[in-house]
Image (cartoon, rainbow, N blue to C red):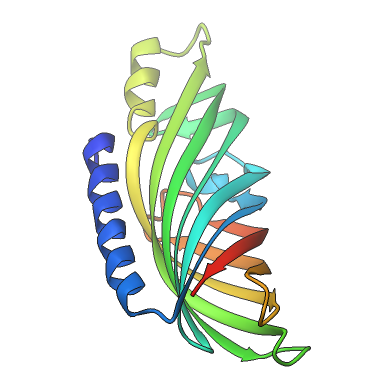
Amino acid sequence: MMKNKGSRIGIFMLSALFVMVLCGSTAQATEIGIRYGRTNIQGKDLFKGMNDLGNTHLMGLQVIFDFLPILDVELAGETYEKDFSFSDGEFDDVITDGDGKISDLIILGTAKVGVPGVIPFLSHFYVGLGLSAHFLNVDINPINKSFVDKDAVEEAIKKVAGESTEVEWHGVLGLKVSLPTFPLSAFAEVRYQDVLDKNMPDMNSAYLGLNLKFN
């Protein structure tokens, strides 16, 4: 896990800006939009004794570069947060109860390929693959028990809690609807994300989005 959150976000934002300038200079059209949906966080990967975190709100922005009628490259930013509680959580050899919060800022890059849709020229299905960076922050508040050493609990939790950067790959499936002479398009998308660090949670997400197109 990489530390120093400010510098990490700065590096990724500069990299994203470079890609945006490069893609924007060669793309046939550019789309800018918003998205909103739900994500299911599989929190049991954080530490032993913890169940899935469940669903929470997901929101974000995206920039889409249209290179060919069937090929788009998307850069997106998303965020979510989720409160949780646990009992008999295992941190090394320490077992305790408690609660906490996980928050995440995600920067995603995805290549999408269109396939024939249900209404030719107005809509199309697409599939895509990409990589993302997660800027995670995990707060854990243990419930002190008389038979548990407080210092031992705090030291064990430090290995899980705090800030980190994780890399994941993801796959998407979606449907996009647009009118040839109208600058707006809408899409519905589902995404599976697999974080490469197995100590961090995987996610399944579904969301709707709206884009404004510039030629």
